[in-house]
Length: 330
Image 1 (cartoon, rainbow, N blue to C red):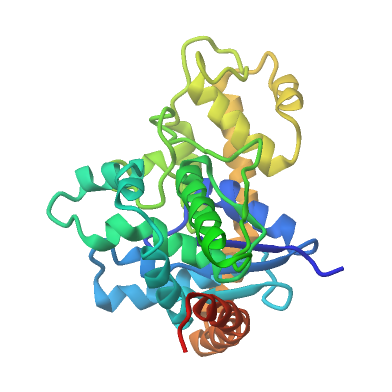
Image 2 (cartoon, rainbow, N blue to C red):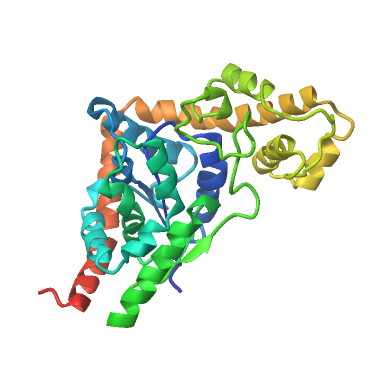
């Protein structure tokens, strides 16, 4: 029996944060033996915001290297750069013609990003979800691991596929959404009501980034918001900061929230935050070591990119051909 296909992608818009690792990359690693996995550096999505050309390529290589450094085997997985597979853009245009303006207008991320980028509300920002749908549908993905903030986009992806299939038959695979029960949404350290962001600009102490040195990690963890109770207990409504740290600790040490609560019973917050910080440091250490090794030879890294793109195009070309033929292109 052939393995089910998993697809996911991350933008090269900044150094991935701990939230990206726990909410996405950690799950990627767990899937690579059971599924046929494709992981993409979605650089086409990244240009809805202006990027410095002299830095953009390095950011793409950085994320590609971090995928591998985080434990993704390029032999077991297809790891590639989105713009290296032109079928993404081709299929996105076709799917634009099967997506309604009203659907795109309801996307909450478009509204949020428009408020943040009032001087650059471009068409790409508006049709971003259609490109995301193309990313997934291009590979016949059965499962898409996402954070819960992407659920609306994936529901639209499913709607587009279902609509297309009603017109032309069972051409596109309708994907299922995969959201981890724990750790899907890691929150900011100093603002635990909002999601940790890899492109944090207002307060760098809100996010721990995968390339942060140990002393920086520990300093940020010491400043993490808790509360005045001095009780390590999981309660997202009344203790969001403590609950967020418990989630981080649980995911990185692979123990349950309940076991983590028992481990810190009677301990003060200083002890608790130090233990969480050490768990983060020990998790990041091998990732950073492997990242440095990979980035010491960007030419070899580019060879891996090329191989990944070739593997991806072998699948994408077939789906693109079937979709085009269904519409009636010759």
